[in-house]
Length: 434
Image 1: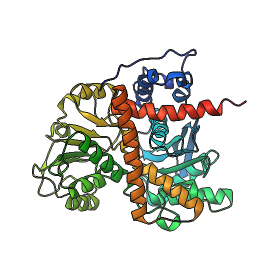
Image 2 (image 1 turned 90 degrees about the vertical axis):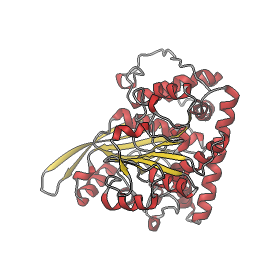
Image 3 (image 1 turned 135 degrees about the vertical axis):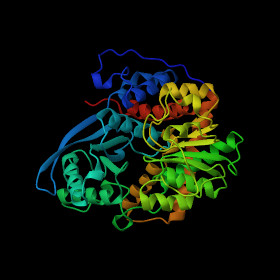
Image 4 (image 1 turned 45 degrees about the vertical axis):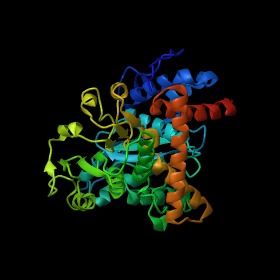
């Protein structure tokens, strides 16, 4: 499978932050759209819709710190596209959050939701903050103020936030409560990823990692790779990478290497994943795990493996390390972990990549299930959730694989073809108002 990059001229100059020549996360998304444009037929007339977010909100988030001082943080909420339904996407707290990143993540949510055919558009939020430096009361005040600031554009039928990097079900509970207090009624459907006792869904915690595992098994089967005995390397050992590693290990794979923010461990015979998960939970990192060899972080990319799961942050696989990767199959648990240039290098080397916009869509799929359950006030069992999740993920991968074979393109481009056609067909049918 191969792709030919193409840049489409526009009739109006783009603002600097939309410039495709600036290869931040948003620039990567624009390149991905350019690659898929030749396959969109008559719908290509609407392609600028994908290159311009529908709405960008930048907010000041002032809070009183525990010592009485007032600190200001910058927050974002971007709604990329809502042609197919309300915006949907997580909120991350990280010291390196940028507008370009949040825009790209919102856009990838548009693609992701359309690829698995759930009736959502794409949105994303974030605050530029290191949450490790805040006390729990400070974190709560930050969350509540941010929610109040973006409350003018979110809502159960408008835009539904969810957990992301450094946010969790407790943060979602604060967001739900703040929004509910401001509108004068309990609105459980305003966020997903909530605690079970507040309308959260069973199976949501494991959904993204389970989705990575599900499409990974399917892709491995199609390429003739036996999961039993396969060597797996995982970057990122949180809610996505940790759960995917556990499921692959339970299926008989050998998880030989794990890297996180503080360390990298390796064991040729396979790591004891349950023990490593307990160690990481107790210490905050895989570093120092007994029974494994410590590796320099950069050496992770040289690990002999069959399957690589990047499940950390964006732009981890680049031109600088793509040649060193030994895996036959890459399953992108993170959002945007591979740059376009690295994508081309890996494709030329015959490495199969299951892209983020389908591989990590398990989380938003079960978020959709949670949203539906909240509206109906009728909740499914965890077994029902997992069965529905596997069906959605397998059906989505089947459709993408068919397009990839039919058009002779990579799975990434095929996923964008499927998703962009669905988004732009909705845009075309709805027309322009007024």
